[in-house]
Image 1 (cartoon, rainbow, N blue to C red):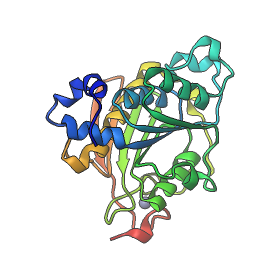
Image 2: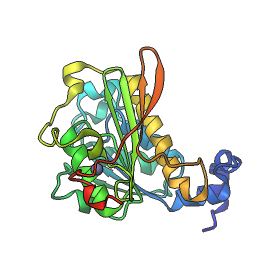
Image 3: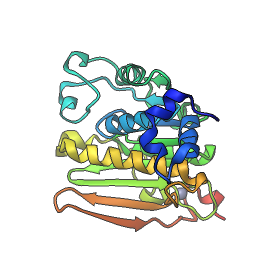
Image 4: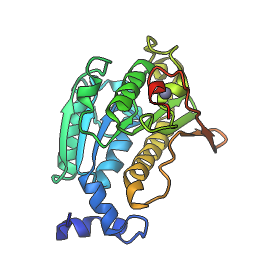
Length: 258
Ligand SMILES: [Zn+2]
């Protein structure tokens, strides 16, 4: 793939990086990322993925903008309250970079529709707000052999992990959290509160990890960090990394244990 002259200019600061270069930028331009959840994590993740020149984006969220979202969901405006987030996010992308092939789906992801919704994606970035959706997304990613970057925030703790449970020896998100949360549909932000900049940090870190995974075949930013969970604390602040073990009995990926 040859990048057009205007694209070479737009991404000049990427291309000059040895870790990306023209070859890496071409990989990003050919990549298809599905974003699940267009809230506090999804907003900055979307902005940095679009800015990075990801060629195709699928935006999935069944929610509408609420006035309480504006404190952290940075792509939405006052006059967009009550409108569907997925549709608004698609408009944001089109106005930001008309060359991006963008699609939106205002559907809640369940075990019944997850496979179809993430179909053809090279990577899924999940920044949704509940375990039931995260597990449905994870199971569909394992079944569809799609890498997953999963991101979450609880109060002042952010978590971002990269998962490839379809690969031998690699854990999936369900290996990490187990089965207990399948029916749990909690919006902890409403109950516990959340600091906007905290979800922003998490969302931009998730975008970085997504780009790392996409560039891994070129050598790019190095190892894709499968099964590594980065946990950051906004109060201290600190960042530490945990390694998630593959669970041979996992309902999501256990059958693929190699
Ligand atoms: Zn698993």
